[in-house]
Image (cartoon, rainbow over all chains, first blue to last red; front, side):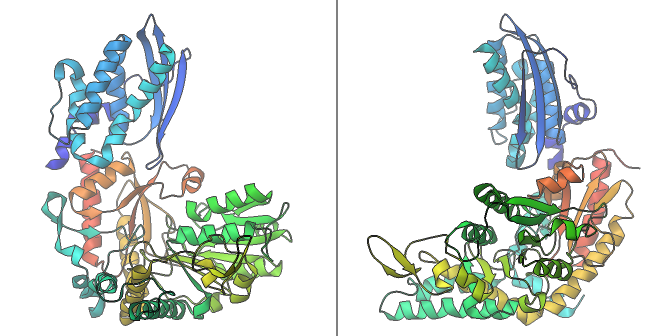
Length: 144
Length: 415
């Protein structure tokens, strides 16, 4: 079923048991992003040391795609330096914009390739990108 | 289901197409916009094919015929809501209608206007279109915005009506039927309380005018707005109605061609009501399309449409409340309620509910439905909303109910 390409098991697993969810007490910066059209919200706490992501926690309400994507992203980006993190982010954004034509580079995106199917559902791309855009905002502010 | 209504679906060409999964379209999103019958699509395109010209100007035959078609549409709309034609203003949308009223009331030159210290009353269940224009008017003028609350069962709380609507209240702007909850407001009670203190009542009829007969005189309201595109008509056409003597006292809020009586380099005076509120070349083909939509509705009969929707809504409510883990957000009884049914599925976000339903060809709306304050009040992130119209059938409702079970099993929340 077409739906299965959207809701991969990895996505449903992260939705039911999200990683890094629950905001840390310490952070360098906190950002809050939302999708006004659907009401999904993410608050993200980010700590970086020497240009490396040392801690990333988040909280939010939203659909399976937005919550799972933020969860997978957190796993992926903790421990990465800013340049690598941005490279992963750019790869993920390109995958989302691929209109179903890309399966994603697993060596870079790891579990996040599960979101490849989202690119066939234009209304859901902004869901998948919510947490990533929050990270982009937060990390660029820390790096300034 | 009456025979006229079961056969009307064939008048709507969109139902001939297939949607996701190769399914036939089951359209349960008429609260957002309605589908269009052939007669409306033809009326709009025939205007362009045969009489297109700028109305109210030009000395030629086409201009005369276009003006005639446009003014006939105004008469059609007036009869549809029990008004006289020079009280009907064409706008681009109901949103624009409500903004025009709010701007005109904010103009100190209007002979009825809002000043610092005045009160404007809305309800907690308003669509953003009947909330934000009033918020902004209050902000511009120093007036106070107040509101009637929503009860736990999705009705308007009238227990403090005389504390909310006071001698300082100048405008009471309310929805006729909630676009989220489906509840129909006790307009008569609110109008009485408003008029008793000299306040004027603005009714947002977007979810009522398309679905049941209404009469502005019987409702005893002062202003009304509804949209063409939710009423089987084209997009780009809305209606603003106001009592003639009130419209006469208001300054326009859009200025330009067509709306003037006389113009010098320093100043201008206005054309008669309603023309003074229609600046620029109007959406003529769309007004003509709306006129065809009203013909179509009248041919079926608003009473039959209302009865059909009542039957379907009752059937839908009965089915949906029996599904475990599904909660209806709004009244579950048929008293003062229309064909908009919002619901939540435990453990599944509305956007995901909508996505699975789409896989079965079922089009619903998900999210906050442009009523964010209501969602906050009800402590919800959003709902899934099925909204019914004349082309829907019991089999559409059956498909929805079956597919909600599929949503639950897909997300493994079956209980």
